[in-house]
Image 1 (cartoon, rainbow, N blue to C red):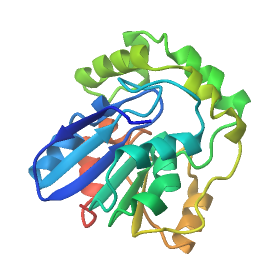
Image 2 (cartoon, one colour):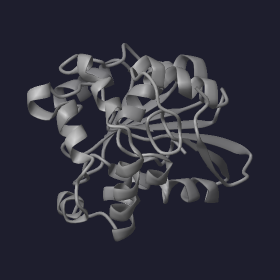
Image 3 (cartoon, rainbow, N blue to C red):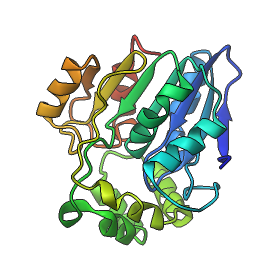
Image 4 (cartoon, helix red, strand yellow):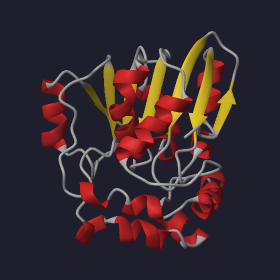
Length: 230
């Protein structure tokens, strides 16, 4: 499936952005322009079931196939957040960016009892007050965007990931030079898994005090954590 995309900048270098579940390209409202200011042409996708992209069957492999069909190979940089990090890890051998950043990637999904697809689906109807209370460090614009992206999101996409609950999805090693950027604490990649990733050749950095959506929770910390990679 060809995905809907948003582009910032006209630089000589190319960066790709892949959002997490329930979001779309609008989650990168500050990251896209910041990378463009550094000389990148930045392309952000809406994954299937999200934003203005089409609907259909949902599995991580299908998400990855869509990204490969939509985005050009050989970019200078690719960043995937949460589900986007999992998607990027399944597409990186075909996209072959020069560098990959996995921002709090969904490599170990919670069990259904703890935080499964039904919980995500229920959150589709969250109020502005609930979103703001859960994310006290977000700017008001990000809360507004979250409400908009939730309305555009097909909650069936969460149930397409149900079979992966509790499964270890950590990559065997980096296909290209790769940074794993973690929240503090990360509920997806704990300290033990972070140590395994370092042993497998990934660089791991934690953004102190940041929540799961690091680029919204602490934009300056997010960008600082990328130094040497962008």
